[in-house]
Length: 138
Image 1 (cartoon, rainbow, N blue to C red):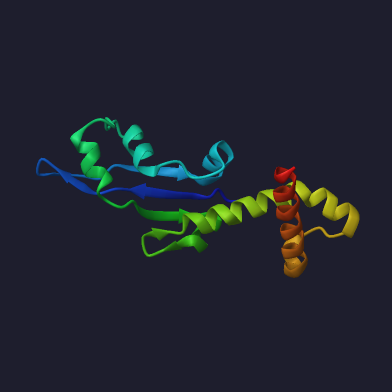
Image 2 (image 1 turned 120 degrees about the horizontal axis):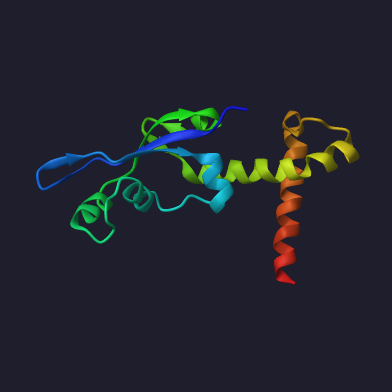
C-alpha cells in the first residue's frame, strides 16, 4: 500500500523577505498519532524553526496553507492546491474501523473485501457509529 503524503507550504513576507516554510506530511502517521490533523501553522513553524511568539509567526498565521505533491489515496482529496482535510479524516476513520472489523466481516459474512459491497459497507459503518454513540450515552 502506498503511503499517504502531502506537502504543506505557507508563503508569506516578513520584513520585506519572502518565506516559504514547508513540510512533507505522512498523513497515516499523523492520523495514527493524533486521530485528527494537528494545527498545521504550528507544525510548520516548529519544523522550520519559527518561534510561535514572534512577529514572523503572526505574519505566517495570516496566510493559508497551500498543498502540493499528494501521494497515495490522499490524491482524491487534493484539488488545485487545496486539501479536503475533513473528507480525508472521515475516510481514514472509516477505513480504520473497517480494518478493525475485517476479521469479523470475513468470519461472519465470508467477505474478503468490503469495498466491493458499498451498501453493506455503509450499513456496517452506520451500525458501528450508532453503537459507539449509544455506548457514550450510558
